[in-house]
Length: 335
Image (cartoon, rainbow, N blue to C red; front, side, top):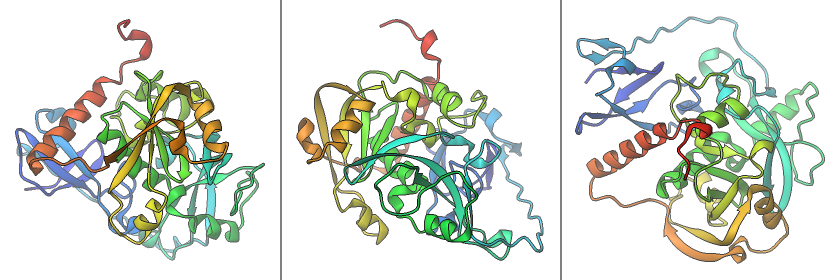
């Protein structure tokens, strides 16, 4: 089966066609929805591409073929570097502004920063996108002040744990979103890792969120990428009502860091009444066990399907439903 080129991504099929669907692995190291394998232990994301939408495939002989052009680059090395993410790079899919979060019981704000420990050539470059606190904060570690960053600060940022890495937050946050078939989840806590499910439909569709909070100015050619549905909290969404919290185990990041099974059970906390994102952040920062906030149920993070075919169908149905949710909230029918 030949390679595919879909929405500008280089994709490699790794599973047979099922009901008009091809499962592929993404090999484009520059796209936000396809993180670089070199930077993340060779992990490849899996996507389901409907073959009934040939307009999204660059066709050749009935099946898309990707053409990868390598440009030689000499003298393209760099020392440790860090900078705020920008709308003119592939980090444009992330929020370009202040982010609210709770870590170890401390409420803080931060920004997303792209950093590299340095590289000798562009082919060996490794970049990470990290959530870095801004002052005032009581969290330990590097702090971003928007002044020119030196190499030492850049190194410290690249060494932050996975709980601050936008890739891993999106990866596991998406697992929770899919598990509960939510339109979106909000990242409330980084460590322990806590995401929240909305009460009813999100006040902003994924397209509205993309154009409001990220570096994307026109979302019409896009699909619901992880940063649009696994949302860091920005000012505009502090009033979003929440119904449930998904609390990951306290040792979740340690197990993920050591490549142990990061699945297992999560604790779903059903709130007695909907809370705004702002109130939920305050409640998490007020101390105590987050499980105290409502009725708790243990749920397996990884859903069990009868077969890979059923899993593929569920993923495809979820993606099609997500794409249909991109209609502006103002044009939705009244409930």
